[in-house]
Image (cartoon, rainbow, N blue to C red; front, side, top):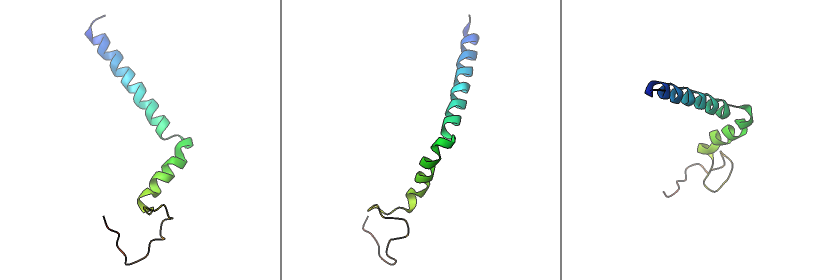
Length: 61
């Protein structure tokens, strides 16, 4: 076994782990988590529903 065999094994292992991570991330079971993360920018800081903030008022940073 030389260094090139080791490089091939590391490359193949990395590719298999990448495919496994992609399949895990985009599986249908994770859809509710993706939906919740997509709504985060619109949520109020006090935990209210999106769209319930009063118009014309600014919050202190």
